[in-house]
Image (cartoon, rainbow, N blue to C red; front, side):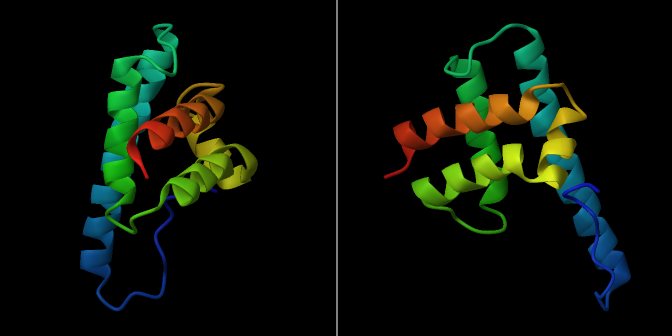
Length: 112
């Protein structure tokens, strides 16, 4: 199961499918870039990694604007929830934990 499975109870299927594809593509772009940085040996506090975490936060804000604690809790779910974990691990083994730890750094530095 992926974290980006479309719902089946939406009246306008075309709009739903377009939005689903937009969200899926946006998420994949962020996850792929973070996986590339991880493979390249970048540390979680590296400015490039932190810049992509900022993009991740902006992506999340399309749905809801999390506080520092809420964003860090979401990041924890990436490690603990099987669907979230599988989504990130499909890009690179260890990516869920990498993102979770990088989000903690970003949230501490950028959210009140």
